[in-house]
Structures are given as structure tokens and as C-alpha cells.
Image (cartoon, rainbow, N blue to C red; front, top):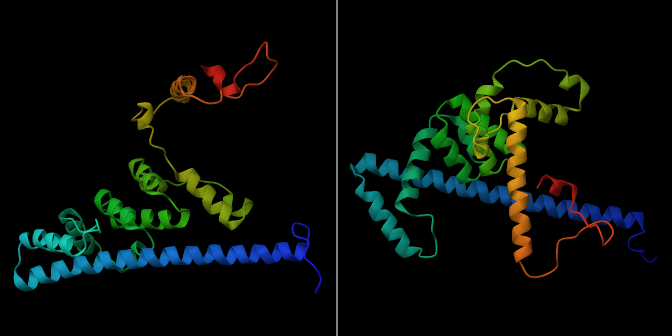
Length: 244
């Protein structure tokens, strides 16, 4: 059997790439299965609470008692607080009449679903955020910013472009989403419309504050000094530090 020259044998590199692809796909599939199982448990527990309250006329006290007993049975599990049990009940009640949304929530973590449930009440808007979060892999923070920026409402505006004819399908879809996106600029102290020049000044100001804080922290910390460029007699910081 001929030897393998690792790093130079093209057949082996393809072989290794296939292995890595299979492993990555397996990890993704496992993560999705765990997400679906978690959401499914969330759904079923919420349904049980609703059904028993209706059948036996139980009041709110049953949720408090249930949370207490579950904490005794599963002391290392933090997801069975009264607040979480009420969220499970609300989750079931708000999505039980919407089959399409029920399919979509199974593809996202519970934190995403709860965020959409609490902040978005329109069915079409909920579908938009559920689909977009799943398609583009939004984190919970990105999802929150999109909701704050009213991305759904903005997506309804008609826009003329040639993305489908000028770009590959997957890039056209992403370009369309970028065109629809709005951004929450609350961290800059901006809540409404703003002139581009004002936005630029706010961004530069925040960047300058960050660099100054970084320089101060670096000077106070033990260890190697920040890397500089140029001759020893006239060192200078990286270009962005000229803002300071």
C-alpha cells in the first residue's frame, strides 16, 4: 500500500475534508434534535398545565406547588421555576392555534421563542422573525435588535432592485434581507431618524472612548506592552488609535 504524504496528497486532503464535513453535519443534526426535544418538552408541559387546570378547575396555586415538587425531584435543573412554568403555559396557549408557527418554533431555541412570544403579537410578524432567525442563524441578541428596529414592518416596504438577476440565489436572498434591515442605535443615544454626519460623529466618539479605555487598561495591566510600528525613536499606534 503506497504511503500518504500528509499535507501534499490531494486524495487524502479530500478524504479528510469529507470526514470533517460529516462530523460537522452530525453535530448540527444533534444540536437540532436537542432543540426540537427541548421545545417539545416545553410545549407538552405547558399543555398539561392548561389541560389539568381546565379539567380539575385548578387555580394558580398548582403551578407554585408543581415548581416546588419539581425542584425537589430535580435539584440540579434550573428550568422548573414558577416563572418558567408560566412561560410554558403561555407558550402553548399562544401558539396552539397556529400550525405553521408550531412547526417553526421547533427549529429555534426556547429563548428565541419566548422573546418572540413576549415582544411580537402579530401572527405574520411572528412568522417573519421565526423564519428569519432560523434561516440566518440569528443569536438571541440579534433577534432582539431586529425586533426593536421593527424589521418586519420595514420589510413590507416595496423596494426595487435587480438582486435575483444579478446575484446567485443565496446571495440575492441575503442582500434582500440586508436591504430590509434596520438597526437599533440606542447604544449611541439615537432613537429616531438621524443625519449621516451625526451618526458618523457618534460612532467615532464611541470608538474613541473605547480606544482610550483600552489604552488605559493596557497601561495598567502587567505583561507585554501593546505592539507598535516604526523605528524605536518614533513609535506609533495602529491607525485607529490616531482617533484618540
